Length: 131
Image (cartoon, rainbow, N blue to C red; front, side):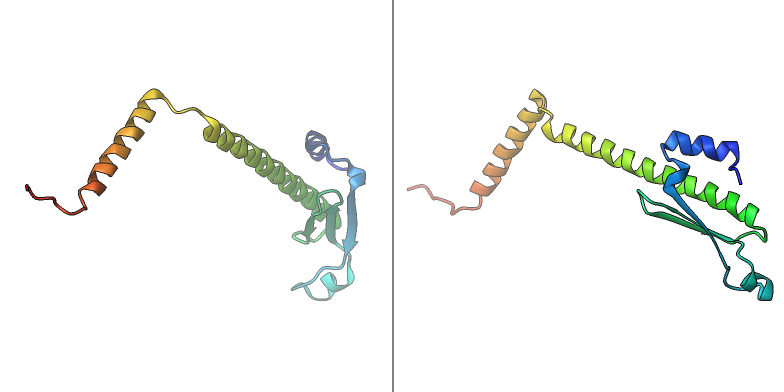
């Protein structure tokens, strides 16, 4: 069975080859009685390189479940790529903030705050009377 064009295009955009995905048809579980227990309409997909798994038994037919499962696999892989991209962007931004030079005004404020704090602390000592 061929996959719908939209799914193939999404997989190509993600750099996933159809051969990398293990596709199995297994018996379903849960409510549904004898029909669900004896037909292999549940679709189980596993993307080998990433280990992402999808199991779908939402529909009665194997073909419909297959399409839904591939769609969900694309969603999961896209979310994974998004998370990785955001994590690298955050790491790069954190490094930029860490290595950025402080402006003259920021340095002056820091020195002023330190002097104020030192004055405050020196006032804690004993009061020396006039002798």
